[in-house]
Length: 120
Image (cartoon, one colour):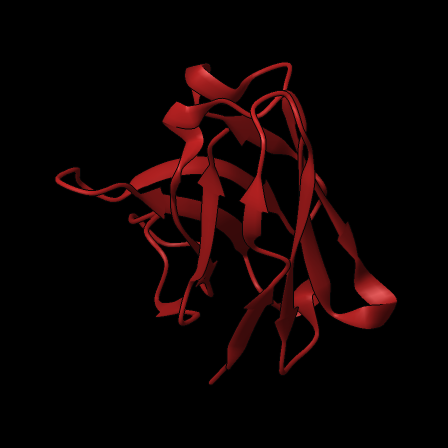
C-alpha cells in the first residue's frame, strides 16, 4: 500500500546535525501517522518521533529538544532534523507508516533504514 525510502544518514561528529528524509509513494495525508524509529546494536527498535496526519507530534524523551519531525505534504515526505547529536544516537534509523487509525500505533510499513553514526 505504501513504499518508503529513507535518505540523509551518514557519519557526523558529536554536536553536529543531520536531516533525514522519508519519501512515501502515496500522499502522507492519507496515512494515519508516520514516524522515525531507530535500532542501535544490541537494542530493540524504539520510537524516536511520530507525526500524525493532523500534524500532532510526539518524541522519545531522549531526543526531546534536539530532534524535530516535520512533513512536506506536497512532496509526500517526512523529515527528521537531528541537532546536537550524541554518540548514543548512533543507530539505523527507519521510517515507518501507520496507515490506519486503529488500536495499534505501530507502523504497518517500513523503509529499509539509513545508518546514522555519531563519532569523533
